[in-house]
Length: 161
Image (cartoon, rainbow, N blue to C red; front, side, top):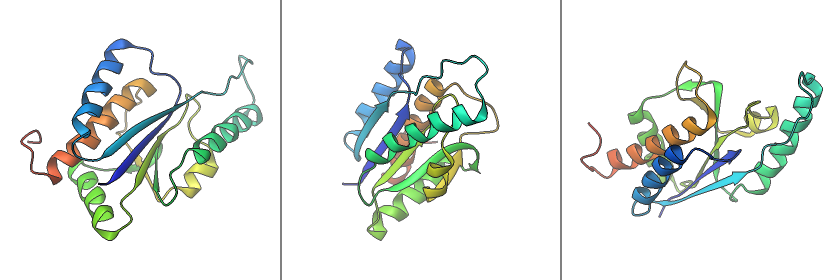
């Protein structure tokens, strides 16, 4: 069974987002081995932090991400400069990875400051959920739903229209 991880920096505090993520996580249980790894966001105490302070925090987050990355898993970074893809593109990518023997995939959503350049360089793909800015908690819900939709497409489940 294909293993799909979602590594997120920061907590999922809003109960309505948590309920939505939990629903799609439950649905994915029969289609893949899906897990969410929630890591703490590095605290930046300065109100107008310098780029160097932010970069240092992002690198600490990158170390935590890398220590939770499944060996052999393809890393897919969600970032603003990522490629816009359709649900069908995501489904095809996950299916291609599964049949190629390199099926394990790890999606990463960074903190409110984004992702470290280290993570972006290591990523086998960079994708964007759209040209609009989403709060990270909403991005987690949208991505989880899209992962479920991709598996629904690949397993010919009626969900996808």
